[in-house]
Length: 48
Image (cartoon, rainbow, N blue to C red):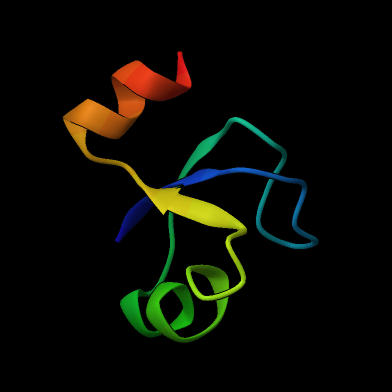
């Protein structure tokens, strides 16, 4: 699952990077804590 990092995450990446992470990790940990947003075309325009 491609995500945009909202903050620095150890062993994943830095804020603003687009990373490919495991779907379960994103759904169960990163998204509920608002650490990332899904990298959809609409979200990519908003982030820029």
